[in-house]
Length: 120
Image 1 (cartoon, one colour):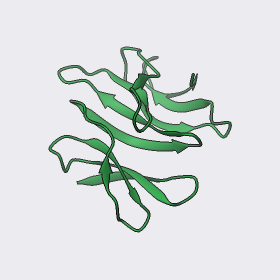
Image 2 (spheres, rainbow, N blue to C red):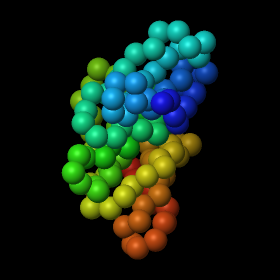
Image 3 (tube, helix red, strand yellow):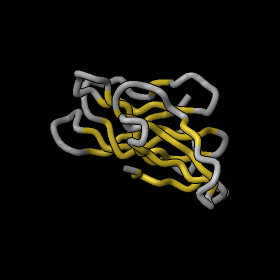
């Protein structure tokens, strides 16, 4: 299954989640469908990529055996960095137009609310 497609700002690539390896991971391909490559290799759910200038994408990472879902920053060839670590479900990320903040939905206050986090 392939899901959550996201065009790069220049329109030349598409990031997406896929279960083709058995678990959901983030992949990227050229806009014409060529040159598909896997970017993440972790246990759990990696999903909902979103592009921003100079950085690849953020991703949702669900740790096995835990309900914790955090937002992480994934850059091709770099270490994964956690952006949120709250014991709640942080989901549906989108980049702020300034490219330095991430808007997301969280249930940390008991309901679905919007939060904004600065990306280092």
